[in-house]
Amino acid sequence: MEMDCSKESCGCQVESLVSIDERGQMVLPKELRDKAKLRPGDKLAVISWEKNGEVCCISLIKTDNFKEMLTNLLGPMVKEMMEAK
Image 1 (cartoon, helix red, strand yellow):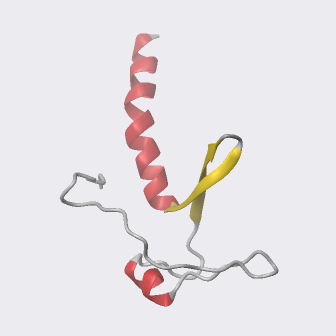
Image 2 (image 1 turned 45 degrees about the vertical axis):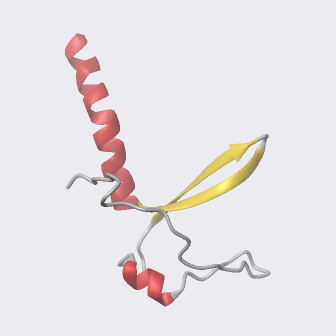
Image 3 (image 1 turned 180 degrees about the horizontal axis):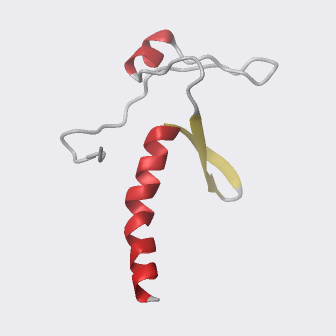
């Protein structure tokens, strides 16, 4: 299954605002968990971007989707490298 993020199929939007408690935990709202089909035990990759030495953005990606994205991105490069030997 390949993800198609053309302008018609993907968009970025603010889903909700969350707070971090004193233990460093946060809760994703039920509506968002349902929409994203997140279930107990699901794994999310935490991706951060830095600007001027500080983390400015944090993104969560389902690990199944992340694995697929990496395979689609790196697979052709690895195949080409292996064929070149």
